[in-house]
Image 1 (cartoon, one colour):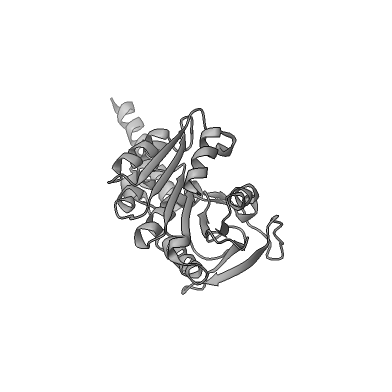
Image 2: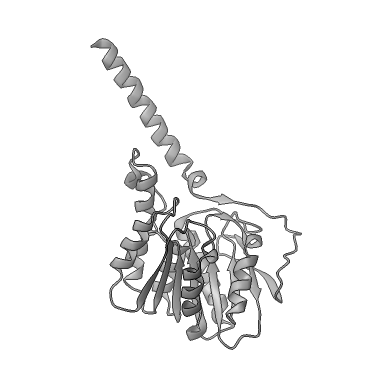
Length: 265
């Protein structure tokens, strides 16, 4: 009995220690940025301008504005939780092939961008880039596009503004919901500083919404996207299911290419 009690105490202490570490280092569990030297030169096939925006708290945010002299408009793109702008050449080609300009954003600590991470800061940064986009395009020419982690940011941005369309590739119901799926043994509701309730944001979006998700996604379960889609009121929505698709390389599937043709019509 005494041994069981001692073992229980040890396990309890270990669990509390693990919980504490998860809280302190949660950014390292969520974000996987790749830094880029400030002198790096991007090598997109299209004509582009690189630029920086400075925030109220002193962060410098790097972005690339790809210009095709498009009359169709622009895609404001928010990437996933790893890599940086330099990994988006294939996305640039896809968007250009559809006849759109593009603006690619690097979050704080990603690529050449600086600043301290927080959910509030990321959302404010997204709005700053939206306002930059409004300086160059009419609002009815702006498509907001988010992939994976970026879908949480894109969903809120679309809810707070009036773009012509919202495209979500491999989205989650909420960051909190995803955290509970990944770490069911931790009290995620108490620990998480990143919640991104996409299902709440999408109730406020007034433009058509396109969702793309693979059935074999091992990072963000297909059921999470399905639940998100079903939570959206109204009929101005479409979900494209990529049978056999994983979390990456959905562009290899005909269903994705066909659906994207409609989303970026």
